[in-house]
Image (cartoon, rainbow, N blue to C red):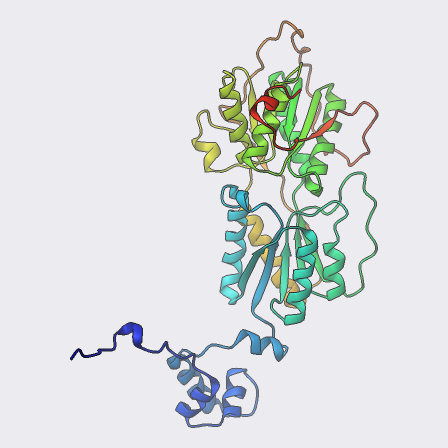
Length: 408
């Protein structure tokens, strides 16, 4: 006859200690435990200390759902990302941003609740559900859109929020006034100033035809970068073309092929993240182009990829984790009763590396005009497009390999 021996897997899982368990061990009533652990009057200091010691020994922790129902807050901050899932793991900016946010929330025992959704409508619905359920005390919002509905949604709910990124886009009317209960802070980087740094670097090297592999067309920062590039092009008499994408390497490669197939291809590329910059370098290699002899490439984001690729990529250097730290601090200040603030982050620093150099000669189109003294690089104003503004293209839907070869 075989004997049954209970192993570790047969044991019941440990039960989460409750206030009743603490009361029984401390020899007091449940109401006394509640007073002590919630730091309320009603028990002596000696009893409070004894209850706290017992709670620590048992491993008792406050229940977040119960805290939310009692109006004490959930102890959690929400963050939603409405982007393709396939670019989250390869684009370093968001990983560093989240790292900075989490490092700031941890000392305050605030958890970060992160969720991905398909679009902005689903994001707004999630905010409403979180608010109704008391799941989060506030939210950090990323990727402001052109005509963005999220600020008004959060303002109506009265949910404290920090929006990362400038909310204004050129050529779009201002939204309706936010309700009086709005508790929204905003922290943003100077996209116009950053674009000017890149353009003047390339202009100084002699480039006069610049391609821009931009981000998603509905994003406010994409609109600002395109507008800033156009303003610089009119001021410096450059030929520029922006191609919008979804930030992924696949569409970055498609955009590069489209630009390279032009009758007057660019001699320099500006890519809105390092993933698309690497994709563009790969497409250039397929066509026998050598970086930077035949093409200069600049990445809007810096990362270990930019520093280890051969040749190393010229890039805008900014600390995304510090950016996340500042955003989290602003949200914690709101939760502590502070007033909403508008905070501008310092302009990133351009880090020249091996991927940018003077352009090659092009006898068919003539050499670039001589470089006179460069004008200062002022911040590009948000202005409507002039009639001679260059074209902005969207990456077409996927095609067969044969179709790709004939794309103009």
